[in-house]
Length: 309
Image (cartoon, rainbow, N blue to C red; front, side):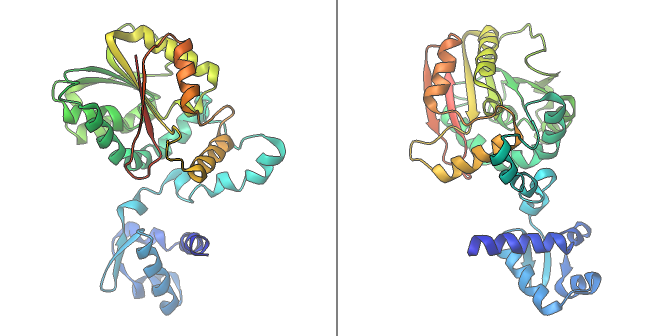
């Protein structure tokens, strides 16, 4: 009941255009009621509900958008409703709504999601970097970030290690966001960029670390083996591959995994949440011999890490 009611509060606010009014800055409940011709008393209850959901912030009777609300853009604006409404048809036919593992679809879809994903993964990135001892045990590294998105993994490493350098590879429109983030983090002088599809783009240099962040789950088993083989050819003698992905946790959150995988299958042709033994098998076929898996506990507790060499 609580979860369903919370979703309906959010959806009502979207339908009534309440969330849009905050683009102009803070508003009182009376100002919003007058602007949108709504019942003032009921509106205040709904606004307070949005405050409890951390979508608005409030002081006295003044409301404004929270950082969370500002990040609900693109397909996240409706909490993925467009995907989930396709679920009955997907169960009947097995045909996904979109195919985000196809280049033309992927670039369009990820541009709308990249900033939200950065916010979601930020705490996880700092936890991983502490675990990896970036700037201490691993320092002065030459990094390649494949499917870099906003650069949350590699750019955060540059913050922690002033001697590290990173090359970020992704589609052109996505890299525009990453370049802004590099400037915001003041690491733009230690970054370089490769625009394109990793499978098609020739790369001649070698790297100490190759990051594969949130890529594995949108590729088929065989395509991931191809990915790992190409990465292995790019590693320096002591180089490592870091795989950040939704790797099922040892303590098991089956509902989260099932929801994520259903959503993934709805929007890809061959996407899958791979288990640890499947990742290990793919890496073994590709020529790797050492594998270490870690659960990352930062909220939202979705991402795991595999280090291989």
